[in-house]
Structure formats: C-alpha cells, structure tokens
Length: 495
Image 1 (cartoon, one colour):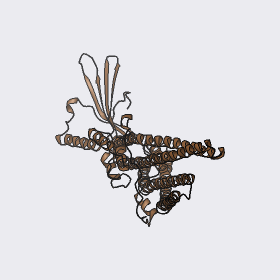
Image 2 (image 1 turned 180 degrees about the vertical axis):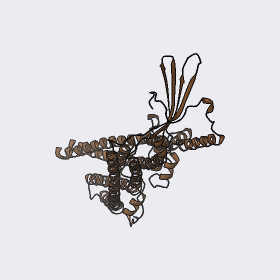
Image 3 (image 1 turned 120 degrees about the vertical axis):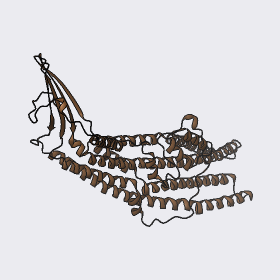
Image 4 (image 1 turned 180 degrees about the horizontal axis):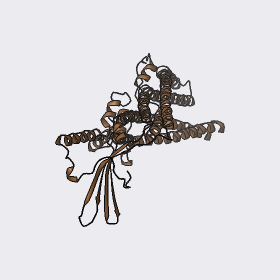
C-alpha cells in the first residue's frame, strides 16, 4: 500500500460525523467470523502424540508400547522399573519409544508440520499504513487499512492442502516410530546373541587352555613332539582371538542398544537375558504378502496422501494462474488547512490493488505445479513397487532363516550331542584319547555357535518381515522425507 497521496475522486467528501456507525449485527458477525477462523488455526495441544499412537497401535513391532514426545515423571519411573529387571525385547522397545532421543526428534518434526498447518489456516493480517504530508500550512494525514482478499478467498483451499500435508507428516512420524522400534529389536537381538556367544567362547577358550597345558606337559616329558604341542598352542591362540573379538562385538552391540533407548551411563548397567527366545513352533503361511504390504504399509499410505495434497496444490495454482494477488483497503485522508478558520476536510474510500497479467501469465508456475504432481504420482508407483518387492524379499528371508535355525535345533545339535555322548563312552572305555575328546568338544562348540547365529538371524529376519509388511523401509522413508521437504519448501500454491 503506497503512502503517496492520491486525490480521491470516486465519492463526495463528507465530514467525520456523517459516517454511519456499524450496526450491532454486523459487529457481532465480524467478531464471530474472526473467532471461528482463529479457532481453526490452533496448533495441536499434544503435538500429534495421540494421532501417532493410534497409527501404530496393534502393530506387532511396537506391541503394547506407546510413543511419547517427551518423557515425564511417570515414564521415567516406568523406565527405572523396566531396567531393574532382565531386559526383554518388548521392554527395550517401551524404553526407546518413551525415552529415546529419536522419538523426541520425530515429534518435534511433526510439531513443525502442525505449526505450518496452523499458519496456512490463519487469516492474513491486515496492513495498516499511515502517512503525514505537509505543504505550506496545509497538513494531510493519510490512513489506510488494506486486506489481502485473494488470501482470504483461497484460505479454505490452503488450509485443506496444509491439513493434507500434516496428515502425511503424521504417517511419516508413525514410520519413524516403527523404524525406531525395529532398530531397537534388532539391537536387542544382536546384544543378547553377542553376549551368549561370549559365554560359549569362554568355555571354548577354557577347553583350549586345558589342551595346551596338557600338550605342554606331554612334550616336557617327551611323549609329544614339538609339532603336536605347537598345534595345541595355535588352537589356544585362535580361541583367545575369537573371544576378544566376540567381547568387543558384545560391547558394541550393547552400546548400540543403549543409544537407541536413550540411556545415560548411570542407566547402562541393565541386565540382558542369557539367551534368545526359542523359535516359533510352526511356520505360518502368508498367502498374499504383496497385498498385505500394499494395504498396510505406512509409506504407501503416505505417498498416496502426499500425491493427493500435491494435486490440491496444483488446482490452487491453476485457479490463481492469472491473478495471484488481490488487495482491498479502506482509505481515510484528512487535510488540515491550518488557516485562521482552522478548517479541515476528510476523504474516505476504498483502494483495490490487482496485478495486471501483462508479462507473467503464470505458465512457469503452472508448469512447476504440474511437474510436482507428476513427481508425486511417480513416487506413489515407485513406493508400491518397493513395498511389494521388499515384502517378497523379507518373507523369503524369514522362511529361509526359520528353516536353517529349525534344522540346527532339530537335527544338527541333537546329532552333535549324540556324538559327544558316544565319544564320552569311548573315552570312559579307554577306546579314545583325551585329545579326541577335546577335539570333539571344540567341534560341538562350533556347532552351538552356528546354531546361535542361525537363531539370531531368524529373529532379525522376523523383525525385517514385520517392518516390510506394516511399516516402511529406510530407503522408502528417506525418499518420502526428501519429497516432503521439497514440496514444503516450494509449495506449488505459494506466491
């Protein structure tokens, strides 16, 4: 709104006292309209916490855990109670969703989206302009109050588009919850398996030490050659190296779990179970994995919602292609003559500002909006293909991991135990030497370690399958976040 004085020629002058006051009905209607619009623009009081909890409810990865945007006294007490007991996988997920910093970051991102939604649904502020001009003894005061009419007319459209964007942000926050829960489960599985491997490798090192000590004594009295003694020492050195590597792996796995749960050093002395849960008794049949993934995966739903929001923004851009700004304002100019009579005159009227589409016909803006919509539609197809492929891959990995782990537990380990029993009988009957018994013990420990690895791989594959069917993949989540940031930074309907 320019403050340069422009003579008013549309209406005859009249004094201040001639202006009719607004009626009570008009004032009430204006106040009601302002209050109702202000109420629509409020931000969510809980930061979207309950909406995200509803999206991930009954998900097998989350279980009965509830994501929280910030820990409070009750959640801290619950965390302390969980840490006082041996930490199972579900307890670790509860702690991570209530106390983990990644959870707080996800809710903070959602709050940013909510603030953008409230901002888009708010009425544009009116602009007040004031000018004071003097010419000789004459003084003129210009006052104008203008309002963006186009912003008001497109407000419902922009509010709906921002609401759709916020729904997409909720789905993305829910995906972050599932990703954190899945990462926590994987870290818990690796930490328990690594701890279990350390225990077995310590037993193996003890057996290797016994063999090396016996070989040393046998060689000292001349019953063994230096070659045989060196072989036993080599086995001991190799067992010690494997144990050191396993201890480091256990430490790293435990620290990864600690970081995901957001625990401090004072809280990191939690206890883990001695072993992983047993395998499921039977292998369920998933008849239609692809359909389940396309129906339930959050990244597919988020891509579809994002494409719908982009389509809405495309409609807004096309509707405002020629006229992308329209302002109307009330003008009141008062002129003081400052002569002996002390007279003054007042001009009132309205001012309309409208851009003339002479050079910019909105072609570039419209082309950009159409390109963004085409990008979103392509991303929906890509996300669907990704979900179907990942679900097939995850289900195949799950079946393979279950078969391997089940074979180890039902065939390899029982056969190995039978061999051990037979070898012990032969040793007691003096039909085999202590060296053969030690060698068999080491072979059994390798089989047990392989069985533990197979059990660990199954539970990792189980988490991957649940995430592939109901959640998202890291690649899909990153693609959606990148797309959302691009559209949010440069919305098609922005002017």
